[in-house]
Image 1 (cartoon, rainbow, N blue to C red):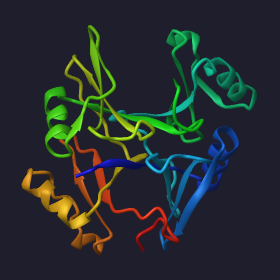
Image 2 (image 1 turned 120 degrees about the horizontal axis):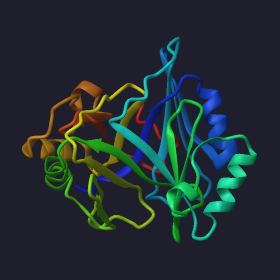
Image 3 (image 1 turned 120 degrees about the vertical axis):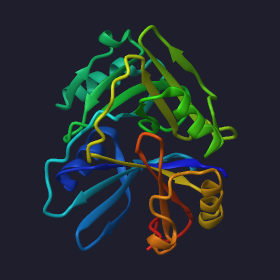
Length: 264
């Protein structure tokens, strides 16, 4: 199982407002769009993103507004070149982006802003990957050992970059063992105080790109993953499982050279 992170799905109130925000401030371009009867989906990403890079999927449900941003999902992180954090942050401030945590409050290592729906966007410095490309997404877990075991056993992920274990919390960065440097990473955050989290519906799912949907699904079932929506239930276009905390994980095959990024 390769298990490259393909996309992160966020739900938004006003799709065009959100598409414009990511296009104006992060230079994201529309990679593909699907208009359903009750919902619309847009895939976004920076120009020149790597083949193994992840996309941002924005979903808007027609006639529904005010999605709840729970705390079980934390943020997406986007990359800027080393030494350019302050300049890019100031540019966003000049453009009227909502400030959340400035570089100074983060020790000059990163910063946070918010998109129109209140989703947190971290800005990190990397010496690789396209400018503003997705670096990682952070989810909060209630048991670090269970979470690490899930991603290690079910998806064969490892901790290739770093871990941070402080006095009150720990962060673990997970990815496929042979994943490309430009690919997206998963950050697991564990707080030691035993708190629980609200999932909300503004955070949708994490999309995992697999080589063979049915074969990889069968392997997950052998490894006792949650049978949430199997391939048959999804017309053999994709499938969904859940981690130990209820975060939804989509499995999808992706032909990057196909006319459409959507399987339907």
